[in-house]
Length: 375
Length: 242
Image (cartoon, rainbow over all chains, first blue to last red; front, side, top):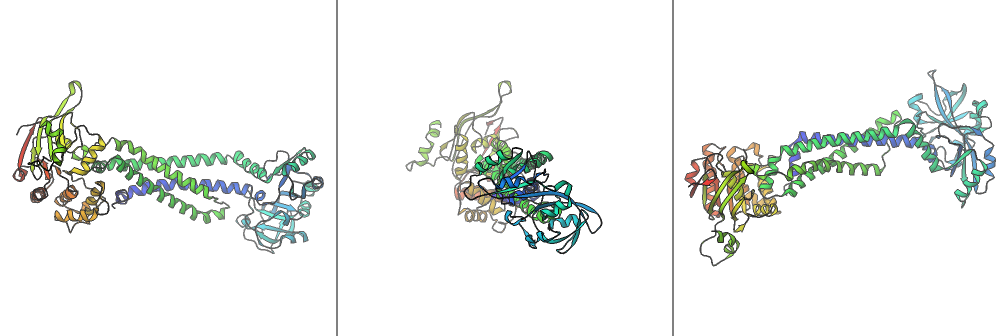
């Protein structure tokens, strides 16, 4: 079988390359922008999503997990008394100053609890034993801090709010939307660093339900008990935290506009080059008609070329997005691309190219095969 | 003549008929363009018949209607009035799909500008035309045989850009005859060729028409074609004058 569609593409390499680049550009833009957005969103709710708490008790209308509001720590005692609650613990989330070996100071976001292990914190420990935090002025630091604070090792000493603390463990994947590095510390140590602010206070109460307990029933009791707090499931709190960043930073709008512009530019480039190619090959398509071919034969050629361009452009874009991941990592940026994004982008690229090719269909349908006699 | 046209399929399929039916038959064919005061009759009342194996040259000045008549006989245009039968099939009122089917089955074209696909080799150009005509597995062997028939067995894998004008026209000729159509229509096939190449192409055309029984109509300005044709028709102002 002679594949005229493929042969024409290979013969007209420059034009084909431009068309493929158009698809690659559009798909890359969509993939990277969507990936960064989803990566930022994952960071925005990473702590919540990785916790094993069934319910989070937060201050009323708390915006997101990073910007916490304090309340009395004693409410945890009342929560523990509710039927259906198996365990409840306080969680403090605070920003403190860390002094670096260079002499400069940076902010550090600290998660502090009495006992992290029952709540699945931290979820990826590279080095150290989280239970050791209770033994002294120690903390775990996420490896993502390297970019902001410089290299560090277990056993290094750092000053937190002017007091010496030892790094006794390293974690990974503990990231926040703010990109401020995250540390884990015993709750009493954090309170001692900011006693005026945090003594007898908490930001959140994490709740685990007893086996078989009905979440809505427990929540209803807690709401009656704590009318000035919100009682949220993990999914609700995660969604609220993400939504805050999407709305307040314009990140969502930015993503949609960039994706739209990327797709638009892609459509214009691909449509223009495919249409130009069709115009350039009108005499050949006229010949196809003259030797007995119909419009469907020519549509098949144009359609196949569009599919080839879409697939090649998409694969190059996927490869470039994959290669981009390690480049972005040192900057604290993560590309999160679930299978659904790949599938949706691939289908969109295909539809984009077929749509662009369809613009030429009308011209071909009106093509007069008698043009083959013109010199 | 008109009864012959209406009965053309029956006549062609009749084993008892003494004389062979014409491969190309036109009766009182007219092609009119435009409306109102801007009407132009490109072809006026043309009647002709070409038998299998016959070579007919169609001459005439530019604008005389030769190419329009060729387009009508090639099932690319439909006449405004009159009757046309190709290989025994009446086509004057056929729709686009039916005309395309007749072109596939019964007509081979040779163009002045060759109209080869620049991205395809000589072999692929011929094989692709056979594919369009319905051949699949045997397209390449048949294309190879057609190219060998026109003396291009050693140029099968050359792209058109690497072939001379005469070689390109021979590829176009191989493409036209590869499907073994009863009718071959050639539009100025020697116009872009030097005299030696033109002679070679014309000899091939004559040999193929006579050996294989193709009815061959050559539209030309080239006086050299006269010597190769069995019959010469002359058109002027849309009419056949000789």
